[in-house]
Amino acid sequence: MSSSYKDKKVITIGVVSELTGLSERKIRYYEERKLVYPERTKGGTRKYSFLDVERLVDIANKMEDGMQTFEIRRMEQKQLKKKEVRERMLRGQLNAAFKMRK
Amino acid sequence: MSSSYKDKKVITIGVVSELTGLSERKIRYYEERKLVYPERTKGGTRKYSFLDVERLVDIANKMEDGMQTFEIRRMEQKQLKKKEVRERMLRGQLNAAFKMRK
DNA sequence: CGTGTAAGGAATTCTGACACG
DNA sequence: CGTGTAAGGAATTCTGACACG
Image (cartoon, rainbow over all chains, first blue to last red; front, side, top):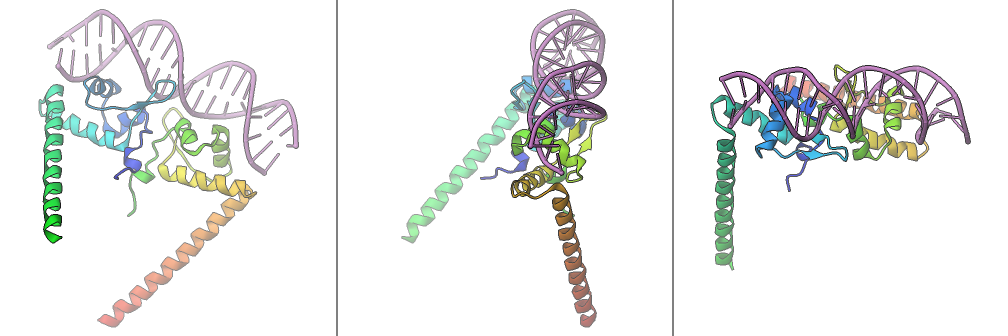
């Protein structure tokens, strides 16, 4: 569906650090806390996508607001759930409309 | 104008090699022949963009067709020139149309 | 000309741990 | 809990050169 360059995991942690302004320590820590999921090269080097970079910036903002990592994780899960519900409803309505037409 | 993730120089040569299937040797050589222009980290490590990756695949195809590096370079310059001419003409027409309206 | 390779060194990244708060 | 740092090692990248054709 939406797959694009934005989702390709190709950026090493050093560049991500530059792009986000976050220390490599923080970036690795947010992975430990299940907030980002980089891929790895055969050798074990982390690779991030631009989407990950965006997410990290977002995480950094929430951390600045005093939010804790587990809260951020929980919040994202909630939003994901909301999104799912919305999509399910939308699909339901579309189905209903489709039935009425035939 | 068009700036996007596609133009950001963030990919190291190892990943570019995987993405394109080209050896690192070839990728460095095409730079030597002025066909691609990666940026560098402070330390000197090359960084490529997705656009560079596309360009490299294109170069690889032309090499397979027996074209030489200098021919590829020349060809790209010609196409660039063509494009400039086209844009200049377009701008000229727009200008003319604009004048007529007032 | 285009590309592989071995060579030696430097830059980058990794993990686990200690520290502080 | 979140993050800095020194430590030792491994993976990645760099350059200049020789080789072959």
